[in-house]
Length: 599
Ligand code: AMP
Image 1 (cartoon, rainbow, N blue to C red):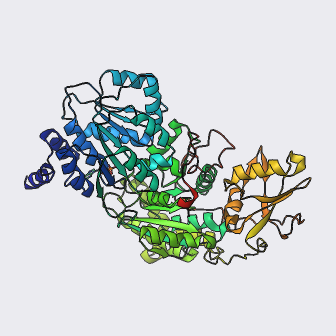
Image 2: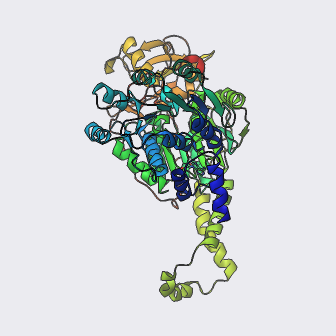
Image 3: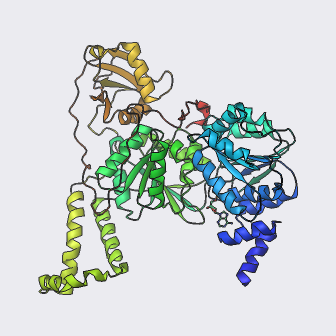
């Protein structure tokens, strides 16, 4: 009773009314989060614009949701509040949260509008009266154009995850939407980071906003520790598997840069016996929903995701975020790592890097004002050890299932000649042998000298490649250059010295793009044909050179059968997987970032 009283006092002290206090009690919130403590009194007290820097998981939905609900006139059916959010997932989450917060606020209706669902159903819901609309910018714009919504009387406009919306290229939509709203409304902007674009929006659309910051600007959460693993460019996947094996209870999001890599890594993990699935823009909404449901239920331990698809993933208890590849933009790293270490829990953000990317770690340390611990990829022996102790602990914690009682006499008979010590040794040997056999020939992945013998390096800062397509495949130098530019998603002049022969061709890129080039073309097929790339032995223009046979993955295959397999989801389109979703969203909107915001 005393506890409830204290709790109520803390939320009551913020100035909230009875209906919300009752809902807070139902939700079991014990005390306001930092952003709530800072924002709610201000927003309740005055009609002001506000810029709040807060990451997801900090309770920001309630920070704007509580005051919004307090300020809305539930007796009027007019739309008074508009919340814009970057993704359908987030839009639905916010709507759900608001419905929970307002369950004792009679007559208040919150309606979600987003793409991928019937626009007419949504229009009907709004017509019934929606004082609050939560919308994605694209669908909102569409509905304004079709006169299905009227936001000319809103008093409050909330831009949630403003940095994400701008990243996704929604600037023009936001601009257009805001032009349909009254001048004198209050605008509340929430963003995890404050890139230049967000500052511009704040300047352009807000007047004298109050600024609040939870934690420090561009500083990572204290609950998240950052670590990196340096490996050879071909060893990312084996390293990923080892990191998973060394953390048997891992519940993680693995971030890749492209849809194709995301799909490929997930498929490899599934084939290797892990509970994994992919989520990216080539999946239908239905497929994405299925994946997310399985992930929430923990049927999936490793969710491999693109940055775009991972937006709005609101799953607590994620133990690890793995950066299979680093993103193009530094801010994206903050978003990725913010998926773990939520709600006061600790989390780990792991980065797999190659030697040439080491400078990016330095840049991250500088900007996030945090330290990245350099760690070694666990050896086979360490993994065997971890797995054995994990098994011992599992056995210790296991509840006895009495269904086996009927079989015990027969089992005891089989094992009656062994002592307890012998039985333990035998039992654990079963497990150990499996791991040991798999890892006994595994190499040390921490040996990352760049001249690994697989490829001869070209001289200077440029690398020359061999590719097994040529004139007979319909390419001249211009077509091949276009194909490479599109597939590799590098800068305008990144591909040079394209030289097409009858059966094969050569081209150059900057040396620091080498890892990316090789990765993109690893297991690359087009129209069922395998396209291979090798670093050419010669560096002179038009140089010849034959392909070297590639050795297979030394660390591939296998995996631990202890982990259940899960469903894999195939992309709808087959060949478009190479787009970097960070650069060009599924809506075909161009990334507005300038090069200077990149590494
Ligand atoms: P958000 O940052 O708004 O996405 O919130 C993250 C999660 O924290 C949501 O599941 C909220 O329901 C929950 N939450 C919000 N405020 C509190 C609070 N004061 N105490 C505990 N949980 C909260």
